[in-house]
Image (cartoon, rainbow, N blue to C red; front, side, top):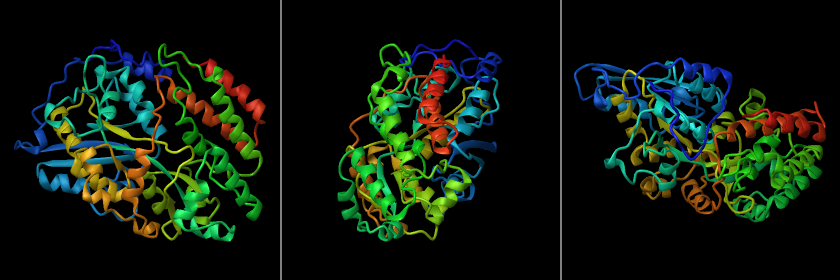
Length: 443
């Protein structure tokens, strides 16, 4: 496989040393060849086993994703439709774990036939787009939002990922904790309470803390995502890809706001995706969380007996957190069959079913407009009209921040900086100095 990096609008990804070593070991042809076993969608007589790797909850199969009961098992459905295809489904515990595995094995091999990548590390993957199969298929035009397709298309016009979901955000809140704090509990009233900017959000948090003495949200790094996601170019210059995080006054202001909130007791310091964080969701250790559509299944799975609801509101109007793609490594053994499987999983019908399973809001306009999505009510959230809520939240998104090849690394450094303050291992000033050093060491 050719090691030349295709010229893209994202520039060069420095990556870790392990990534550079892994890619240097790549030695196969850059043009993928389907093996005889690569039965397109199982249409040939030869049996084929396809491996699928994702992270967190994509809504494909509760058996692998550990979520609450799903309405649909898409893996089983595909196997039933294609009797000669067996799917082996592996789910990483976090996006970070999946990213490390992806870039370590992308060159030399060893990845799954179908690999999920998260939007924050899509720019990194685009710098190695020649190591991924070209998924371009005119028959699938219109299956995804134009911007979703554009982001995964390299300078040579090769589409390297089929869009799964997008992540329009609302605010999810613990009804019982709000009631105990004397705050409104009706979703419309809660939406009115939060209507405004981030100052409004933190003001409500201060009211909650003053009434209860308890933390308002899980950790500053979780709130960072919503705030950074509303900046046009937080970390890198869109024209040059130069890292500008240390010179961006909005980034420093975000950091200062969050560390001040931590010092005021609003953050519980429970790191997202950790065991304590999951237990805290069930035990009432915090009252709110920024809530993209796909997060609904996370809450329900971690707090099956909880009393959570959804407020159709977000600070400053709208935000998008996440959204992934399915890719096919070009040196896989079953490229043709894997491509058809990825296309099927991300087709409008399956995107609508994934939404019903875990709230993964479709990147397919057809799926988003379908009756299945628009009429969808989430029983766990006191019969919240989740389909309508997240359709409105998606329409409210006004900014899509520029994410270059170093976005993931810089944001990870910021997350670590905020966590040091949450944990009390460094003061806000000390941790910012460490962030400066970490950013200067990137690239």
